[in-house]
Image (cartoon, one colour):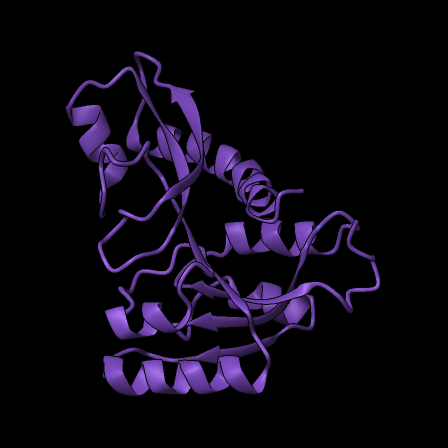
Length: 193
């Protein structure tokens, strides 16, 4: 059992681009006694990302790296992670692709959540593509990040039934609820807890 003092928890950074609802659920999870991680840094590639408000609210260090120059941004990111003793990265709606070099430096320590049942529907506009193909089910996947988009080893998945009147918005909402539950469970699984 990990002590709730936070001293022995794995120092984790969360990378975001948007509203940060998965960030919020990870912060809540990280503050529970059974969590093996602590969220110590939030990094966004967008200065207006709503998720930055959660970093502020929970008094977590934050930084904006615009990724216009990927090499430069990744160098800065590595430096931030090193200075802050970050040992794990959770991608939560981070809309940039990390380089092979960067991923190599954190091999097996970067997790991502994707709103489909991988290996189906990698990439963007997932819900729209799922509905266009008249799928009966969709869902979400937490996986390790490797150098190929949405192709790393799957940790956990959650299936969601698609109703006849489903829209992109309703499916997105339905899956997001499951994402918030799945990400913490996947982290516990990674640490065999």
